Image (cartoon, rainbow, N blue to C red):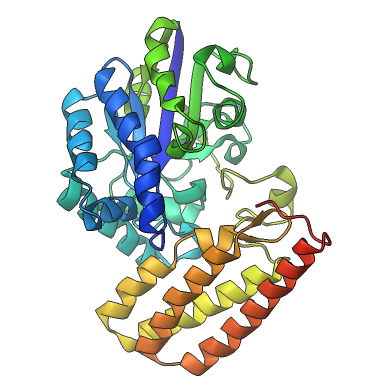
Length: 371
């Protein structure tokens, strides 16, 4: 018998357009929740970012909440905690991490009636020991991490010095889902497919948005000789090995990056000049918000820390200037509230000029865009 622990993460940034939220819901979220509620023997672990639930609420997407209620009643979906606005948590202070976690818990409770989550999904699986301590302090039992974080070959282990357990996804199996897999049989061709336990973690949007109708995969599982489990079911049934030291890392980290001390390279790379400017703006905004002592700009800061603005600022790899500019719009609101608008505009001008330079370079073929 093959066991499959499948973890899905669904999210849209706080600046996402209504068109895309509704389109992705039609292509992915609605059929995904529907197929899960229709297949009670298919167990999955699901992270819904709080900010996505806020989109559903703001846009009065009642069908989404009805489907969430249906999956809750079916009992085959384990929901996880997370950070509300999808920040890179190791780049935050402990206080900011706690605010994000508590905001997410409040949003999940108030909009979807989801309580008492055992597991925690780190945005972009960006892990640090300091963040692990915060998550453990908030009462969570386990986290999902990429296999690169553990030098030992293991599927799950306790994190040394903490009460937290980590479950490590297989990159080979997860990448198969992200790319070439169309049917369950295709996953058997992937690296690590020979393992008796498959542990995968991907964006949930692959099930219908990035890959048309891929949610139908869940209809095939019951006839594939595979037993599915949630993370908590998996941990409860197995003896977890010795405690391990986990490296700071993300789902996208490479060994070369880790050796170079760049664990979160797609979001903070010291060799990326755009990242340097973005995080300089972030640091100054944080100081202004802290000095103000007001709740409104602090709530705006929570939203402004969303990861996509940094992710799409990688010329030649991942490039979407529109998301960079949307991030700047949020930062400008914070500086308008807290003062320092002249300092912000100076840095923002430098960032816009460098983005424009890269746009010209990409258009002329001097830089290859990963867009």
